[in-house]
Length: 235
Image 1 (cartoon, rainbow, N blue to C red):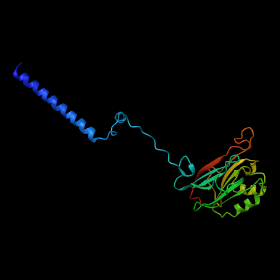
Image 2 (image 1 turned 180 degrees about the vertical axis):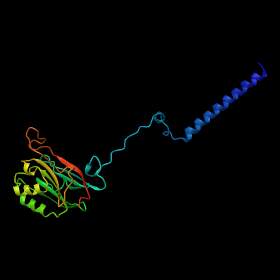
Image 3 (image 1 turned 180 degrees about the horizontal axis):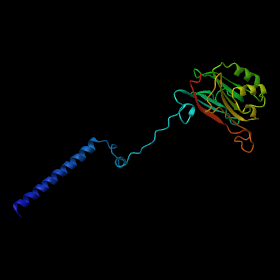
Image 4 (image 1 turned 120 degrees about the vertical axis):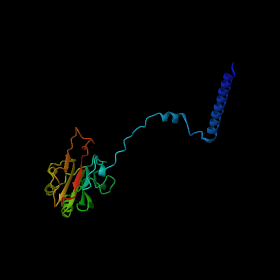
């Protein structure tokens, strides 16, 4: 073997020795200085994975609308009662005016009066139409609402048995098309404006009559709701 070949072999062995020592030193340094839980098999596997894109959670809208009302409008949602336990709910601009937890929510017809200019609640009340005759009290409550008010109404249980014709006429004058069709335990919701007119293209009223073959809650029909956006520039 020539001296040149011997020199090449020696250089290769020296290079291998240097690389081996360097690899050992790096391994030792990592073992001493890097926390044991810093790198795991799972973490190494994640390196090669593509990032998973997740859609952001949908933003909650006022009164639980699916889509938002414009900044120049009020949001409302009116839900009738259902059965004995599910009481009426009235929401306006994300404020729960009448809820199932309120003491002011009871059997009969629930009414909320809102100042249209400010969007703020003026007053709420409920009027018994089964065990008591509060038809006249409801008429006075509505008549005392000032011009420029929104009147939101929803039944819970029975709102018809003691509802007098004079009260029906008053509600009809506000724009109701169903109040004279209300029956025992009908689910009914309604929104009206006093002293001005609501747009024709918004939900104003809905009714659902008791039907023993279709009722969700035995003697009671399913609850119903209306919702929408009311422009702020009507008056």
